[in-house]
Image 1 (cartoon, helix red, strand yellow):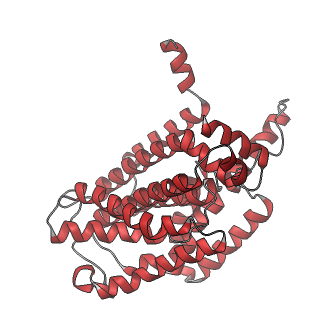
Image 2 (cartoon, helix red, strand yellow):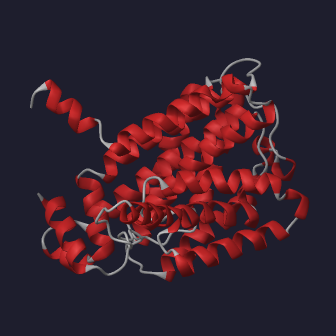
Image 3 (cartoon, helix red, strand yellow):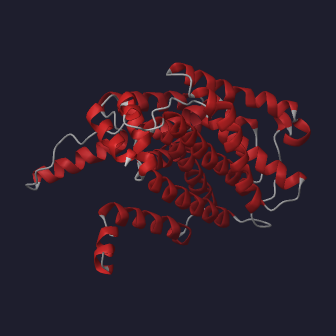
Length: 349
């Protein structure tokens, strides 16, 4: 392939769109953003990674996991404790926390979960996340227990808010580049094949055990690293990150944005994180607002905001004389044997 042809293949509308979004995000601190806006942006980037890799398990692989917030907390506390007790650079502990969390999650959850189905997977992963507050309390000499952990070393001494913003942005971009390669590669095709038509996928040679272990390892690794970035940009942790309201928020991010899509969790993370801050004046009622939003989206646009955007785009194309369909395909999973068979065949090859 010539250089010109390779450049044309890379300059797709999606690639250009993502590039513009990243460029605008990088320019945001120079557009007069306040410290509070930079703080919100930093949280959006971190939660976008958590939501996207939760979506990898649920939306792409079809594994009903409810424990990803536990992966996040585990990575945050592991990295913080190693940085404090062992005096290791946060850059190193962030990666170490991801590796350790991936091993623990794969052994304690990935292997047993592959023997289960449906709601039993959800219950096991939920029990894992629910056990973490007790573990944090029992190890309070290192974790601070219910009080939380303060004085966590940041990536740079005296880390400014704008610096934390850029650390979170860089991590978010890196994590999503890797995620895109996974989704569009053989591994992602295997995940989708097992989700849509497991019997057919297994029949033609897709290894359910291997792919199941792989998706748990990948998801827990990047989610734990997101927790570590959270710890070393904010400089403090609290067991409140495992509270029910945070759990609902993260799930709503990829459900509202669009399960089984790359852009959906990012859009959902931005809307939910910013919206939650401005709804704090209503206290616990904000959870009701999030629940109502999820209900409306699931009823009318099962593919989330991504499907809504596709529908609006189709309307404009129709009005301008195009031939686009009014109902874009929904990529939220389900027993679509034809699509699953196609994905399985490509995964096998």
